[in-house]
Length: 326
Image (cartoon, rainbow, N blue to C red; front, side, top):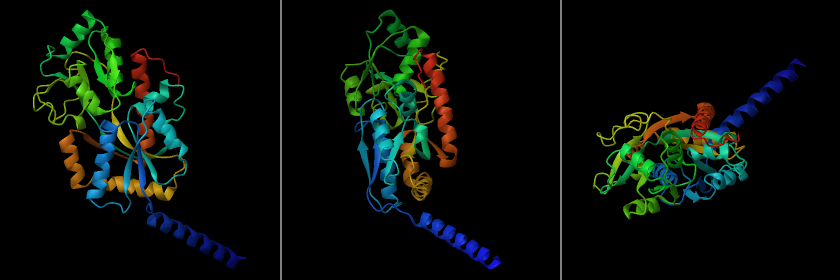
């Protein structure tokens, strides 16, 4: 009996060792699809392509990574698509704030971000609230006061109905009594064209989308959409709180998740991959050029982080008098 127990123990140890070796050796053998909820050029799409560029430039993976745009329903079409890929080890997704918001308010958004496989949060993306350089609005108060005096006259370009830019509008409207509509466009390029062409008065511009529009004088920033000033933003631009509006600022985290029930071996591979990404020179150059903030949160802490984001978002929605159903 003792001999049998020793043999059984040896077999279990061997199997465990083989399993660990298998997990260590796993790599994607075909193209990895990276799902985003935005159209080409918008924040999520630009971020996904930047991450892929780092992976390719630094030769961090033998597999090819490609962006798959699944627009519609805010984040709903994208997150439902990812959920339908249960157990797929070659599908990833870039989440943003509205992956949480949509689930809290939309009946059709039946998939929660927490039900997907957590891999890594990579950044917080601050933003600027901007107008055209020739706009009569010199400060955020100028715009708010004008929107109070002439409700719905002035317009804001935006993306999905409950994205960070839309949420900021909801909260400002609820807390100031001003009123202006959000005009949704599927891509970042269309939003920029709308404001540069004079079709809307204001826009929330992600750090990665700022480019040279501020430096060239085509756009002027009224406020930083951040709890504290961002060193790479214009130094004379106040935060929204400094501009006189003490409100809860919607955070814009961006990170990577996989479908439900992704294999442990694949999940571990991607976790290690993204840990390497944020340490590379290419990534650090991207962070500097796009004015984002690296905020790497490893998978074992990501579930708690996303739960806290959900709690904060729920409070922000309620402060904007938006019905929360979950």
